[in-house]
Image 1 (tube, chains in turn orange, purple):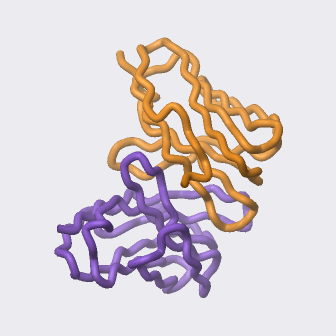
Image 2 (cartoon, chains in turn orange, purple):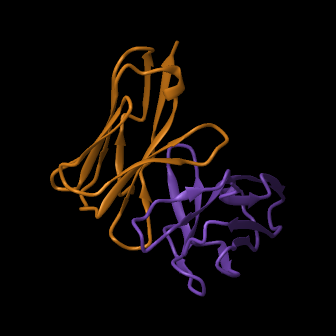
Length: 110
Length: 113
């Protein structure tokens, strides 16, 4: 059983469209992170959110941490083919371990 | 900028064979991790080492052993490989006790036949 549930599992959109990926849990996390992974590579950290209700922006990517620190979302505005990849959320309980969701595969068609 | 280096990148083993996956980081991080990634299951933690000299089991430790050789190196050993261990293995490091932010290697694609 995954501690973190991501939805949807797959997402295919046209270039220029917007998309949102969700990460949900029944547990309260100390922090939550988003990673992007490209084929044949390891995941790369995009952002860490720590405070309930926090919103962070990274160019066209907007990350939000839920008020109760149990969920998060990643919104991409005007998606581009370069945004294609596997998006993973990960949470920690203020210990040494990170628990990952199963990931959302995003495909942006030109 | 080496970061986290894993060797080998690819490996094919026969059932019952043993092998060690090597991992080294040059960022002076305290914590190191081994994950496996299978389709539709994300990354599952096999073992981790919070600091030099300590190791602990993660979610899926059965069939694996680890050694934290020094602060830089953390190896993963399969004593008797099984087809169920076919997977992509990732090593990661983190500057804990700073906020956990994992830096990953490029992975080892292991096939057990």
